[in-house]
Length: 301
Image 1 (spheres, rainbow, N blue to C red):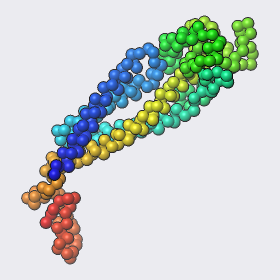
Image 2 (spheres, helix red, strand yellow; image 1 turned 90 degrees about the horizontal axis):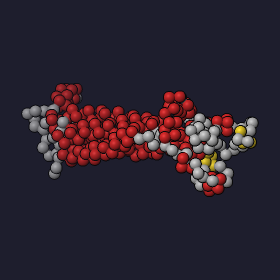
Image 3 (cartoon, rainbow, N blue to C red; image 1 turned 120 degrees about the vertical axis):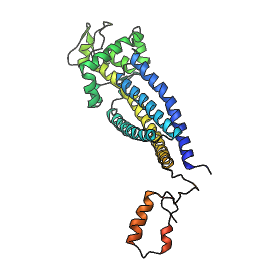
Image 4 (cartoon, rainbow, N blue to C red; image 1 turned 135 degrees about the horizontal axis):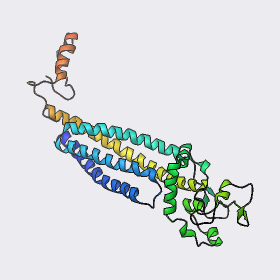
């Protein structure tokens, strides 16, 4: 019968080899997002890179520790994996909390939705309205040329075709706006007055544009949070296997293997001394055959 520690270490070795290889596209995706001007979700770039490098280092430590029975590497792996699970759990709960709400409102008679800043969580609203974040997001929206794609649309196109959140919020005024002689009439949404037909202005300063950016972030954060739940389950399973491999590696290093080869009396374990000096002296009148009960799978008598 093969030793249990060999089986556990082989399993954790293969699992960490797979996660080690999987970290490469994660890091590559994060670097691509950081360099690309077509994406406006800068909030997701740093967590993606941190997650990728974290998986890489943790998997490397677990792979080395499991394959070569390096006890300190497995111990480091368990500690970092526990921290990673706790951090991922916190990010997942936070992600579900901040992505509540939003989703837009269907415009009657149109295929597209319109988005309102007040529908999103307070944390996202504060984040997007900070000048340094919004200036970067605004430059990204302009650079994406999303509005140029609908510049030649006719009124019939707006009735029959759908719009992305960016196009709905940044490339046109709210549908409820009415204009007379090119000027917005009184008593309307503030975004109606911010709108300008110039290609460099449009509705880039509107709250609806900020809401359109938040809608993209909300959708991707929600998908990421759902994925995090799956990753958490996998990490917990890998952590359980790694903990078993860690215990086996420690037993192998201390000379206490599993299986049919029990420990020799020449080199008794610490719990044998504890058992003989405390239990036997405190309870001298117990039946003699009770002293031969194995401790943790070790035959004492």
